[in-house]
Length: 377
Image (cartoon, rainbow, N blue to C red):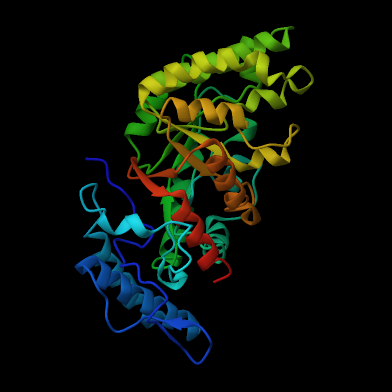
């Protein structure tokens, strides 16, 4: 059964502001009565109190320790698909939801480390920004090491993987109870390396595996690049579908990246029929696809993918994961609110992310509430 994820951190009950009392600071405080509360809701409430108290008292380690213990109990009572009755009232159109009671729920799903040779900042720094911006967690997804010197200038070496594990574990320990730090990987799909990837992925405890096709790396250019920019676009989208059909990945990242390598010849309407054929193939695999907010900083300044492609994804029931593709700490969670606006404009109502390689979902309306309520903590 697919698990649904609650932005209230395991079923914290939603209370309306009517009946709440104002604290001396002008903030609303929870009432004594918690109608409809569950065990997980009560635990989540205790967790909420301990974390806020710890922060107020200068990151008191004892209170954070209590919070971590409660968090373990909360996580032992996950919300499942048949236990969703409390979610119905959590919409952005309901002005009487008390934002203080909505727990952080979103993850930065796509971030890097200096080991890839084109990113800055350690995972602990990325986690700090995730906390400040109201995110529940951070999944580090650096470019996977590859054999044979494959694009070695933009990824960690095989002998650096242990260091990758260590720096993520250090961040996980440092931010325990505040930011859920997890290890993922961004794995390059390139025909001929499927067996290597399968072994690499199966032997490591990744929480999230992104599949990527990077048309700018020398190996791709040597094998696939043609004089005709449109044919390069066609080849790229076909490789995306090939990647999805391997069954190795959870999500396909920045799925129209080729537009930045062929910007002068980029015509969305001309390439859209080929994109639709690609999406037909991807939809059959059940994979998610990424809305990558970093596209606004590239040659064609829009998120990846462009709106018409997002609309076609929706029509095929393809889930969407938002990721900032952060290569520096300041980019963590960047553009998330704009991304949610874009998704809603084409008809999406929920976001996905992955924990333990299982897809979780959260309503966009609730995700937005959580960011607004908890940014600048």
